[in-house]
Amino acid sequence: MLVRLPELSDRAAAVAALEDIFFLSTLRKDFASAEERDAFFHTWTGWYVERAPNDVWFALDGDGAIIGYLTGCKDSAEAVDLARIIPKYEVFADRFAAFPAHLHVNVRPGFRDHGIGRALVDRFAEDCRADGLPGLHLVTGVFARNVSFYQRAGFTVATQRGPLLFLGRRLD
Image: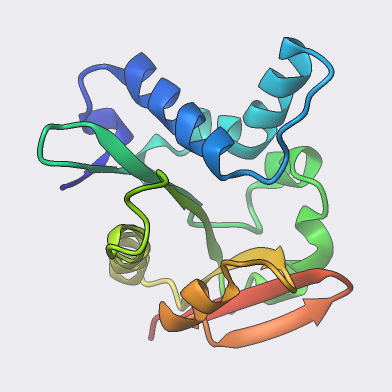
């Protein structure tokens, strides 16, 4: 089952589950302090949870446990705060008109390769299409393990700049 953050009765538990999955999925594992770890998490998720909760989706298993999440933003160009928070956010700003929405998605290990990430991406894409958006995108590393997943999910427009790879999915 897929639900938005505001639909969950225990927001704190949902964000805690998001944090758990986030750190199980991120390549960065070492932090000098708890404060540095918290700041890293907030950099990559805080704006979405606070400013775009309707674009934060969760995948729940049959028992209601959170097994995956998607954080999204439907207007990357207007999310000026994100450009100050997320490193290299502006590198692909020239692509935002054609692909205004962006996303981040992670699934708990043990539940990957079961279509959960794809379901989250497709649900967000449906929302974006319903809002009349022409496309959505994400940025990853050129050699990241997730590139083939996104290509299979319809992100076929690629632009490389240095080690970063912009992948866009047309919605029209």
